[in-house]
Length: 435
Image 1 (cartoon, rainbow, N blue to C red):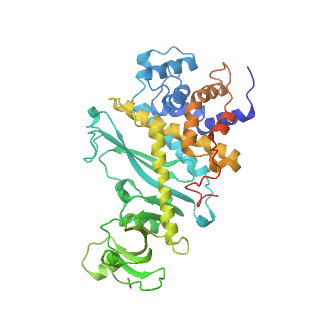
Image 2: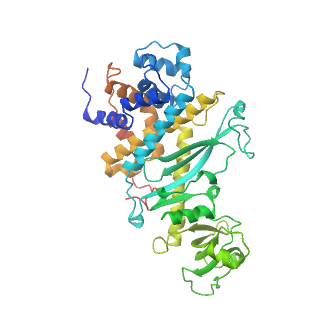
Image 3: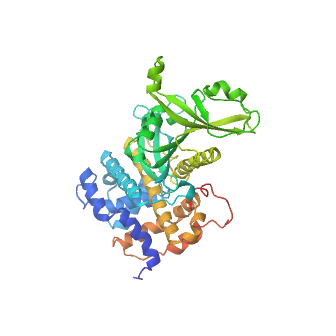
């Protein structure tokens, strides 16, 4: 057998460090997914799912079974293989996700731009609906506004600059987003970006109390009391101090509003109680000439840290999570789940997430090894390259672990060449925030 090159083996080394064979086998046994390794090898099963099933090349379970058999050398009875798609497999896959997200959180040190020096990480949270077979409406009821009676809500916290998800939740489609945001010590020195689904003054106060930071759009019905202006304006700018934001909005003539406001979670009528439960935050308003309206943002980032315009620009980095969901649905088949089997559905969703985690892990590896080209390696471009190369990578991983010594297929140079965007001068969304 031809000896693999160092360039190629670094890919397999990275993946087997993320999911060592020993850990996969121990976890499979702990969760009850596999009781006897003679029947199913959880290592081959795992990588067959992630590097074949996850990219949609073997979406049919029968094809996955054949692929598993060809790699493991085992003649698996169809019923024995299909019976593995039970709650024990779901628990096994969830533990794999937890391991990967924990490793990313502990190992990944995103390089933020000079503007964001002093912050640990830039995170955003959002959710997406996954439409399911109508027969699953009892287990996974969808929201009333959705045309599908059955839907699952996938809620994620992702690192905007890092490799991917920091936390993953799968809940009923009808569940609201705000309760899914659990604030704790983990937010310290981090900036969290989120949309109106998570808007809650209590969240803002909790983030601030844990020495974290946030930027959110301001709800249309939010009407905080303005304390004073943080940005001085020349000319006939009206005095906005100690007035409600929505009351003075129609009379504003400035392009940028940057003010300190008082917010409260109390509904008491007593001024003393309101003051006791109030907190000072910052509201930024940017005039949109095309729409002839203000876009308002609320944050606890100081004016010394970011200007009003930079706050609005930073919020646009939330688009990174939209691109993550697009990647999951377009490249990893999250939008093509038509099974009526609850366990199969959850296995497919977990597999899509794991495939994306593995993909992003390799992309970050390539970026570290090619720092001069790192900015040209975008997530979506890489996802397309990874999807094409995943079957060869599956075979390479099996060979690397001694599970299928039939040959070797070098991938490193192809991955590098194809993942770099040739448009060198193209402006990137994260350029202001990443070195």
